[in-house]
Structures are given as C-alpha cells and as structure tokens.
Amino acid sequence: KVVVVDFGAQYGQLIARRVRDLHVYSEIVPCDISAEEMRAENPSAIILSGGPASVYADDAPTLDPEILKLGIPVLGFCYGQQAMAVALGGTVGHTDAGEYGPASIVRAGASELLAGTPDEQTVWMSHRDAVTAVPAGFTVTSSTPTCPVASMENAGAKLFATQFHPEVRHTEYGSAMLENFLFEICGLEPTWTMGSIIEESVAAIREQVGDKRVILGLSGGVDSSVVAALCARAIGRQLTCVFVNHGLLRKNEPEEVEEVFTRQFDVDFVHVHAEDRYAALLADVVEPEEKRRIIGSQFWKEFFTVAQDLDGVQFLAQGTIYPDIIESGARKTGGKASTIKSHHNLIPFPEGVHFDLIEPLDHFFKDEVRALGTALGLPDHIVHRQPFPGPGLAIRIIGTVTLEKLSILKEADAIVREELDAYNAAVFAETGERNSERSVWQYFAVLPDVKSVGVMGDERTYAYPIILRAVESSDAMTADWAKLPYEVLGRISSRIVAEVPGVNRVAYDITSKPPATIEWE
Ligand code: XMP
Image 1 (tube, rainbow, N blue to C red):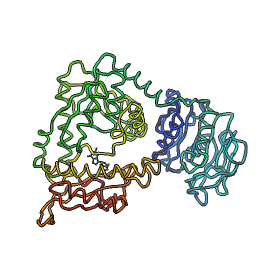
Image 2: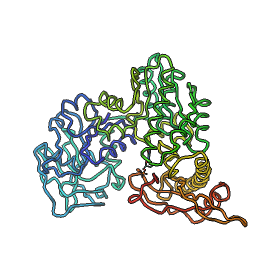
Image 3: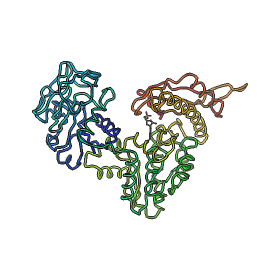
Image 4: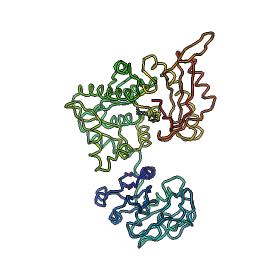
C-alpha cells in the first residue's frame, strides 16, 4: 500500500483518492507519525501532502526526518517538498510573489518523476514559500521564473518532490507523474480493482464473523445498504437486517428497500413497523432539534428490541466510511482499536447488552462505496440516492408532524423527485457526468406551517403551499440554489397543485447556503 502523510486541510484525501484511481490502495496518516510507526505500516511508497502552514511557523507540522531514511520511496508535494527539504538540510524561504493557479514549468535536468512528460508544461501552484537550496544529493528537475525549485529529486535515494500539485486536474501531466512514481519508480502493480476489493472484504468479514450472527440497522441509505449487500455476499443468512420504518421516509422507499433485501439478497430481513409509535412520540413536537433527538433515540430502542430477541448475535455491522474515521481523528490515536471504542460510546447499548462492531467500509471513500454497491448489484436508486436526512420528512414539515401533512408532503415530494430525476438524467445523458455543473445535487419539497388563499374552478381554497428546494453542491457545506429552467419549475408547480389535494400554491426557495441551510429545519 501507499501511505499518504497528511499535512492538513484535506490535501491528503485528494491524493489518496488519485492513487486509488490508479488502482493502488492508499491510506492516510497524520503528519506526526514517527519513523517507527511508519515502519510498522510497512508501505511500499510514501507521499507527503501539501498543507496550509509555512514550514517556519511556530506550530508548523514537521516530518520525522528518519522517515526519509527508511529506504521507502517518498514523493512530496508543495508543503511536502518543503518539509522534505528542511528535514534533509536544504532551505526554504519566502518568495517575493507567491504563485497561485496555473504556472508553466521548464525542465531543468534529467528526471525519473517527469519522464515522458513535455519539457515545458502547465502545472497548478499554490504557495508563497519555496525551496531555496536543495539538500545534498538532490538535483533541480524543473523551475518557473518565480520558483527556481519547482521540482527536485534524489533518484538514488528514491526521494522526489514537487512544489506544484500533481494531484489536481489542472496539472496537465499530474497523473503521468503519479504513474511514473507508483509503477516505474516503486514498481507497484495496479491490482486494487473492484473485483479484488470485494474478494478481500468478503474474506475479511468471513474471517471476523466465523459462524456467529451479525445484525445491521438498514436505513435505506447508501452506506448501510452497501454494508448489507457486502455482508450478504460474505455470510448470507447469518446477517439480520433490521429496517426500522419510522414512517418518515419518502413515498415508496420502504417498499423499495424491502424488495431489494428480500428478493435480491438472501438475508434475514426484519421490517419493524414503528410508524404509529413515531407518530405518537412526535405529535406535539415543533422544535427541530427535539424532533431529531426523539427520532434518533427511538431508532435504537426499536433496534435493540429486535436485537435482544435474536440468538447468537455477536456483531453489529455499521456503515462507517473512511472520511468519518479521518475527520473524527480516530486514526491518530492508534488505528482501529480506538475507532471502534469511540463509536461504541455513541451507541446506547441497553444494560447488559454488548455487540462487537464490524465496519467493512471504514477504509472507503463515498464514491468507492457507490462503485462497490453497483458491483454488488444494488440498484441505481439506492447507489445514487441523493443525501437524505436521518430524521427524514419530519424535519421537512415545519411545525408539528401529522399523518395528513406527511401524506401531502410524500405526494408532492414524489413529483419533485420524478421531474428532477428526469432532468438530471437528461443532463447526464448530455454531459456524461453524474454531478456536472448543471445537474441538481439535492432536491425535495418542504411543507410549511401556513395556509394561503387560492381559487380552483369557482371555489375559494385555503390550503398549504409547498416549497421547492433544489440545490447545487458537492459536499453540503456550501450550496447554491439551482438555476432550473422555467419549464421545469412550471411543470413541477402545475403538477403538484393539480395532483396533490390540500396544496394550492408552490414557491421556489432561491437562497444559497450560507446564509440559509439546505434543509428548512
Ligand atoms: P443543512 O440543512 O445543514 O444540511 O444545510 C446539510 C446536509 O445534511 C443533511 N442533513 C441531515 N442529515 N441528519 C442527517 O443525516 C440530520 O439531522 C440532517 N440535517 C440535515 C441535509 O439533507 C443536507 O444534505
């Protein structure tokens, strides 16, 4: 495997994903890793990421110089190049003008890393500091007018570095450089494919589980569905999937989940009809966080009621994915053991109940989880399901949640999804990209707690409006309202008012995040 040393700001994640795109497995470690710990990781190659700091800042992350002497090939990008230079006795200084964005590098000497790429080419830079003197044994392999050491290497010691960012798409030959490093310099093979991933995961699950039983809470979301499909492949009916139906999923979703996990996969499927219990618990609740708390804690009650009745269950499977692990910092304090512990604290096990966790997706990024789902035969409507909040439609009904309002919202939301699924499919057909700039990322209906006057036929109506929310985003941290064609907006509006009794008006939310949020509660 390749180990990516992360100097901060998620640069490491992007690099790890690029390496995996080339079918080589990679993992991320924090930059305070010692040479001893690195040796224990036993990587075939090390990549040092960029980072937001200046190497001379007081709290600048440093690299254990011994890591560069382990005999493992190392490639450093940006801050990684500077950290490598400083660790080996070179110098780094402020340049007069930083370089941000595209820059043109010119080859300055023979280079194994840049082999096969043009002598002059466009790369992506983002720095103010730069290496001013290379360490002994290194040669400068390319430069720009403002950056004398755009890349350097000591091929004999298998140490390579670039000031620019080969991991971003704007670096024209970035991928070729990564390939040079992984395949030519380190001699790795591109064997990490979907087929090998499934084979290894299935073997690992079988090994861990043995002849014991596993229980899993199925939500209908991507992660829990892929865990279920993977476990189904590995252990079949030793897996019990508990689907707690809180009545707050979208129209037809409970039926679709049941269909997939009873017909397509051979697992023990338990459908818990908890709709009435949730409705009673939510009857007078208005405050959004209170709704979330009630829905979350009731889930575990329902889940453990089933779990306690099953014999011989030793494991609880969870859809934890790699970013959850990286972002929780769990990796930092010693890998898997601490991760499992921190999760365990979050699960409200009843007195005397205990399960060991199995988390087969804990080293996969979201797009890899989706690819895995597709390879395992899960349908597109699950694998490419848009983000949907755990508390479901309860937080899309402003004010109290009633069965009448739920029914209105489900019908209106089904129309929104039908129209915008079709719109996205048309954009996908045209652009070939699932999340192109023109496609809509998340889209749904909201039912506010007001009524307004309308007229239908000769009659005055006094009914609910539906608010349409449709946003473009890549990570939900920021979002912009989707500039949908008027025809699409018009069709959604006419259909909702005509087809959903109790609704006489449709409004479109044209607020970005920030200052608004994507959801209304
Ligand atoms: P906001 O509304 O904060 O939402 O802009 C950002 C993303 O998170 C989703 N969301 C939730 N997901 N439980 C979840 O699992 C929740 O309570 C929750 N609240 C919001 C939201 O749909 C959007 O994708």
